[in-house]
Length: 108
Image 1 (cartoon, helix red, strand yellow):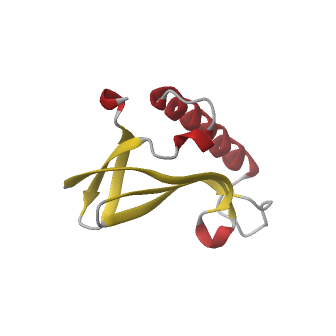
Image 2 (cartoon, helix red, strand yellow):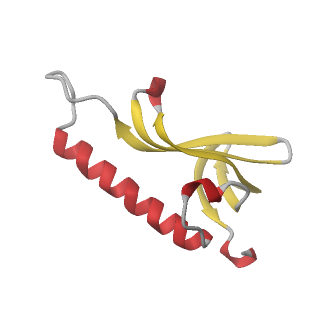
């Protein structure tokens, strides 16, 4: 595991995730010589008969996503997701895989 210090370079709410078939919040995180994306959300389309998830699963995931956004805004001391740009973050990687990230509240 390694840790990198960077910032939220871009953030938006809308279509994103797998082939832009999802709805949620997308983050571009990066620092000197590195960058990574993260997405919180779920499928944007209505469920078809072959799906492994239910409409309730989708609603639950969107609710959980909104609650994570509220928590993130509170930690970053912001009132709008557009104001998260340039907020400092610490990212934890396992090899090249982003495992987690957090706002560096201690420097805000």
